[in-house]
Length: 250
Image (cartoon, rainbow, N blue to C red; front, side):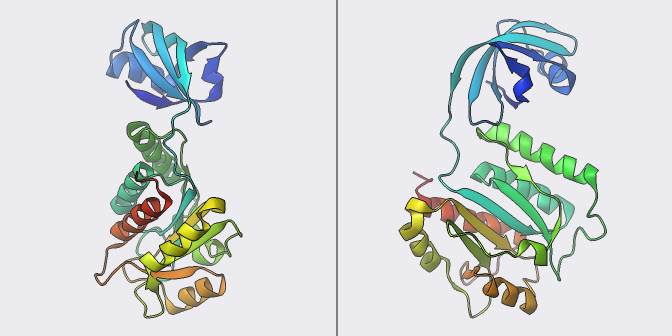
């Protein structure tokens, strides 16, 4: 069944009314008909199966026939602090990160960034990023809609993690510990771990001053192996390893 995130106001007293772009998509693009079923999600963690009663030009109405709480979210929140790359690369990171279970994306501006400078207040770009995430969340069966925050300078994003969080920074420096070693400590902390933060730098890596700032904040520098990974690959590799360590790949 087709899945869509909607505002809670669309789901009231067991009835559903869908208008605007979603109503047009259902009626004109997907050409759904009365008695067809769809799944709606209100970003509360619940999913609702809806049987359509009426579909006209740009408007669809129906009633809820079932509700359940999908178990598709990771056991800990995953926050990806991604150095902003060129446009298409970040679009891909948003899509694949959403599929893997990222809860929050924080695009960051670092000293060696090649993308995003001079566009910090671009609301249209932020809206497009959020559309990409919404579509990926619907496609991948997510129960909650990941957040995409405004582009943030590295110094503002580099904060000491709370006691129930673990912060990791992908690094190619000699001071980095193997990711497997960091994940063993994650497994030990898992019962009370609520959040994992992952910092991924640009193609040239984080600058020495940024690495020093991260270490001072208590962020653990980790190596992702002997090979040099592109920025759009590094985060996804690390996220996959974290999910495995948390038992979310079972």
